Length: 238
Image (tube, rainbow, N blue to C red):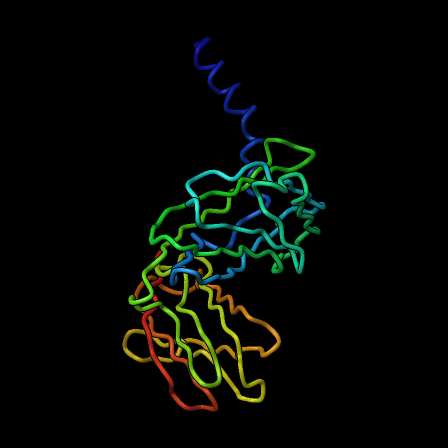
């Protein structure tokens, strides 16, 4: 009986810890960098403050294996930092209920064909138990290999990532012709229309919330001025 009482007391003390841990969510699942030797890629990291108070986080550590010829930078808006040198300068502040969209990772592929992964650990400056982790993977390929990127006259569009997706599916793009109408259409496996998303010429990332999609295979199509350009597969998991 005494042991049972101790167990429930311990469990009760941990409840605040568990509840605090869920107040800021990383919506970008498993950031992936994949590209040619010598190239550079930028990925958006989406964060959501689900609490009713201002949250301020500092970068605690960079863990994992970033190759000797690869470099990673953390950008907050237009300000970019080297996490190995500028650890104390990297600070995120999220307002109550805020969806943070101006946090980016910039990855230089380097000159060596390799692959690996790394984690960025952030901690609340006022509560060390309040933490979150951004997970990233990379694969550097020889230039003779195909890169998952569509480069057309009017647009450059990345493949959807992560794929499979659980919560958020993202595209990176750059409209070379700002006057063209570009959109992404999502269809079910049997061709039923699910959603349409116009690509804002003043932005470079499209984030799609797939948490309400049924698990399964979907297809996304790029349209330029209502002309079907290319179709590829998106997998949604729970």
